[in-house]
Length: 464
Image 1 (tube, rainbow, N blue to C red):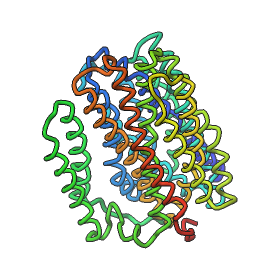
Image 2: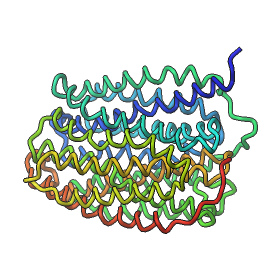
Image 3: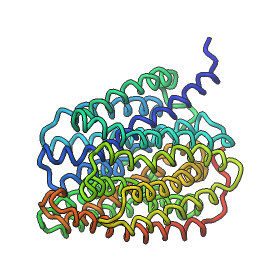
């Protein structure tokens, strides 16, 4: 007979290790994008939309995925979403049109949202409060290891074979890595009977998706000088209607009352949203900077881009263990300060900057996110009772994705202003100028995050 405790330990390890594959693809795609854009003749803004659509869909679906994780089997949702992400990665290697690429990236964003909501919620069922910091730290370490290896591996593959092979190799390793998740989650195929069933409010879900889609369309129209005001207004109205509806629902997707009452939760989410504007924005922009401005090939650009993720992968597990012993707010606050410093250093980059300075920017940022991520996730998940861990993990992932999407949206807007329909390779000074403008925005947002991080309230115990 199988020991349930041993089976749960194996399941925890499986969930932790499963974070590697999607993160590996996430950072590897950044290195493959210039080659993809050249072969498919994508303009600068369309190239930015390859990432913006993915992040927008993920952000738009996360609260919906969190509700599903509180309604159905978190284990089944986790394993099937991981499998879908791998299959979609393989499919991206066969496409030849921009619209097909963007469609598949939308579907990948959906699968990522479901995995991001169900995985941490499942860990909340399996791990006692006193060990959550180290487990979340290990989970972040696995994800950051994927982020670290993605650029270097993708650079080698692009140089030797091409950008399509990045998706084929990445998709294959995700599917192989998903096999243990299928085996280990089969025992938890049904939702826990102790967890109350809730409902999904379809109209407010649709409003949230419409708001995110309108922002993506607005960014896309900016490339052609189109009138974006109407789409921005549609996004504001849709999201405003979504927020207006939430307090009037018995089971809201976004519990605004809980955010007003729970200062610890609200502060942790706000800091995370502001800080994650830096996350993918830096990798995307610095990949272009190294390859277009500095003239590095994808392989050598990947070597410098992996600096931040290597540091994150090394620091995150220790930060999680430290957060189990001291106030996680303090550890997360120090991490926030490191991200502010990295933004200030990134602002100094110009056409004469050496590639090693890009590595230094990312290493400092990696130190910050390594210290910040797992303690802040522990704060968010611990701020709510266990039966609401689906919502807690979804809103945590939502704030991260919304931050990354906002960062990419700002970058896409800056690219549209600097380039229009011209390809990025035609204007290296324009890339350097865009990087400079992007980091000015990041200095402001990360500094605001730092102020909130050290002003947050003392914790209230939950989640035992």
